[in-house]
Length: 301
Image (cartoon, rainbow, N blue to C red; front, side, top):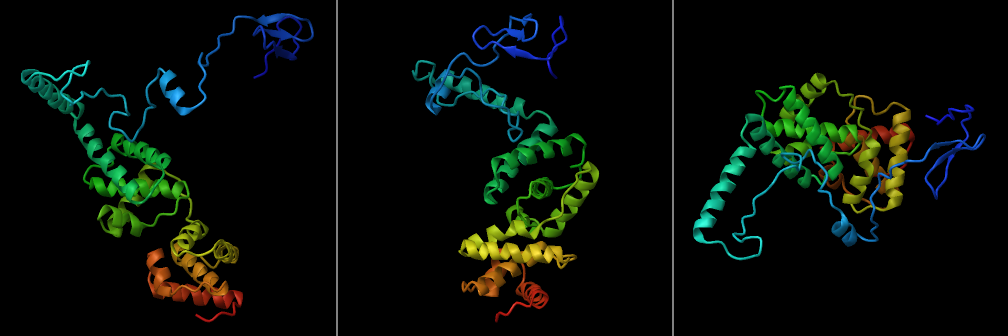
């Protein structure tokens, strides 16, 4: 919203960088002269200086049990000067630590979050999911707990479903097969939980675009950038002509990578591509035939 001069009504207001005053350029009225600088009063030129001079704690994180706002009692058995505690003092400190942990997870919700957030981090690490998505998944899981949607369901299934939902929303290609492998559950169980959460929370999940899988498949198969780009072009043409309707995005992407590899002289077997994509060789063969026929691609498998 633009500042307006109370004297003449002009909106031509500028700030004097030396005095910090806001001055009307038409009538010269000083509108404000007592501005408060809300920025930090110190400067830092590298990460070490920033850590030494900053007087605030770490940011709150939904992936931590108490969002990071918790005090931990040190278990080293020394006082503030580094001197070793007596056996009596150490026993007392261990009792304090024990009761402190019990107080931290006193309610059923806290106990549930303690298990779920640990499982979430484990799965995210296994699937190499970025930290920003872990935070989004943790926030979504807290919403499911708050609405009571986890009752009667496995914690691991809800965590996997939440993580899969976040990956779909932010266009990070992860399949249900990968979620099942990471969680140790069946694809059917995770899929059922995922559909339930999406329906109950009203989440608008976009359709999976096969293009998002191309870079990952090409990278895991050690294919060049040219193959990756050609595979992307094949998928984009297939989308425009409506060839992917009713077909799994991973199968289409895998077939496109397979064809692109053949055309660029970087041949990979259907079995190799199927193992990377998590689909069967039959699926790749069917999608390959469809794409080859539609685009008149002259290539021999």
